[in-house]
Length: 296
Image (cartoon, rainbow, N blue to C red):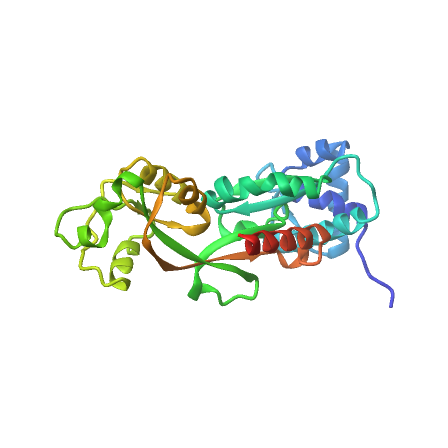
């Protein structure tokens, strides 16, 4: 059956114009005139029978139909680009775009990147931290590691990597201050908190039958790696992910008090845009990531 396709060059121009939101910028990126861009857009609109841009305000904004069409066409162009890349030797390294939780990216992943680059020298890695989950659907993102509540995993888009386990830690000089006996003595203690996780400490006390009420702390941080620095400095006890603080425990800068830990109710998932699941570079990264997690 013969395919009915609009002019491919017009699709390429539309993809650029929609991405930039400006005919002039699209023309600059394609090394053509603005008039040439406008003519290609008109040709595509005539072929489809619907307006793709709203030109009422002296600019060029996508209509609702245009936005819907762009979502599909941009993904299709991306697939064509990567499929062609399997056979074309590019002078520049192939790019791999990743989104990773801040603490994981800054600490755990950073220590692993040297090995990845050595194993796959043809890839140029772009890492962003703490972007929203929906950002994984952007076409420059190839994969994302997402931390979310375990009960929220109702979508097949997320593949479980591991459940988050928190270790009860303190600096070596503070171990006795935060022992079970000390906690039940009625004295006040400083517990380093994480913004957005207000119930962690009380859940930990309840699980371990520790008769202590989690009172407000003077210190609360947005990211786990910031909380770890505060615990190492002796500013309080912390509940930190094992992947983050295990090396510090080995080095002796932190102590896992009484080997106590708890599940946080959160887990880490691998999210891959549907249209990139079959890409070779994504498969390589996913396999490498799982291998690293198993080794740890």
